[in-house]
Image (cartoon, rainbow, N blue to C red):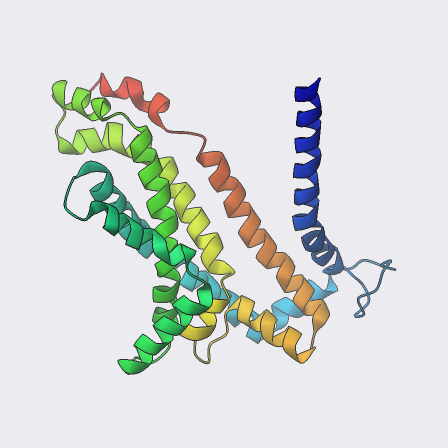
Length: 271
């Protein structure tokens, strides 16, 4: 009886936490379709007018395009550096290995304002003009951690005997990578890339210190809210940001359930 009560209590607590997190987001998404330009409840009518207003704004389109480019480039950098670092930590033993792992994970634990100020000071000291590439560098500092953790976790769950079996069956390095390593890591890399892009797309603090005069989508929203302008447009843009964040995260969560081993285990025997 106690276990049943415990399950009900935990279920109720989880439901309350989810409602606490999602009710404000749901309200913003509903207000994005509000016919009135005044945020009041109950909503008297619904329209998609504000999405058209947002899309016709050159400032909003430029901000979206800048956010997408920065997110894709930062994700690409993170996939290369994060996966390489994960392989080094998982497959090799060397002096300072744990320290290197700690330094790789540290940026995600630091407050964004600390990372942003440090990067801004570095760029200013070296006379580097703030641009798209400084945004990419700033975002890559925490995107690398996401990919690194995903790939490292997958490598630690993968038995080294799979690679040894492939080599024992006569596979060369490329065949082992194609039929064993890549199927195992593919979903982890895609999931890490999706999470990294979602995190980069809505990053505000680090972007503020590395963007200069450029406006990414979150910075544009922040400016509109601070000035109290175009709140219906802000709601429509916020709706888009929520979708750009929720969809990659949901896909990443689904992909992380699959190790990729069972799908291609039979392929090893055919090498």
